[in-house]
Amino acid sequence: MQKTGKDYMVFPLDFASLKEAKSYVQLLGSHVGMFKIGLELFIDQGPSVVAMVRQLSEAKIFLDLKLHDISATVKRAMGRVANLGVDLVTVHCASAPMLEMAVEGGRGKTGVLGVTLLTDNDSRTVEAGGFRDAYVKDPNELVLLRARMAHKAGCAGVVCSGREAGQIKAAFGRDFLAVTPGIRPEWSLLENDDQKRVTTPAQAVKQGSDLIVIGRPIRDAADPVGAAQKVVREIDALLGL
Image 1: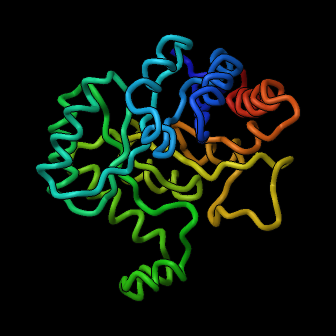
Image 2: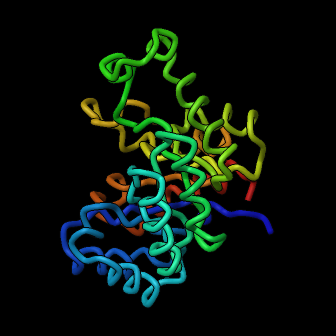
């Protein structure tokens, strides 16, 4: 089936309260393909927030927990996540055994997304982390290294910048998901954005992104539904729909 612009859209529920998150699920549930539940809301509300999204929307659920612990602990945590019925969950690409155990813990019910390099990281961050000069000079090489680790471990895909999505697809094939945060439509770009490696929706999809995470440009718009529809139209135009 042909994907539409809506299918690419992931809206992050980056809110401090369930009430606010619920209002956006009700508002955008028929305009986005997936909701992302992050740490702040999940720590505050736990599994109840997943149940709320399931009740109010047919959109898929991406649980962005960025798990990072010893392999056995991550496997057990993934088992709990799989029981919630979410579609995707994030795990840091910190070690191959941890990723493998995460996939095993998901039991085929929940796909694992390996986090390659956070979108507020740049060369200076990589250098401060003590990585090799080759990765400092070109952080994309670090992204590809970690994506290779995730692919070999059986992950569903990775979280990466839209700038790297094309390389990910070329290296690991169409079925390996490239999920891209740091998406900013042209009409929403800020001079002092805290995201370092940003792309527009059309750029990201053209590069090969399967899912694009767009938060602030929609959340902070005077008309969030109109902003979401504007992004969908931009992607649909690219797809020739």
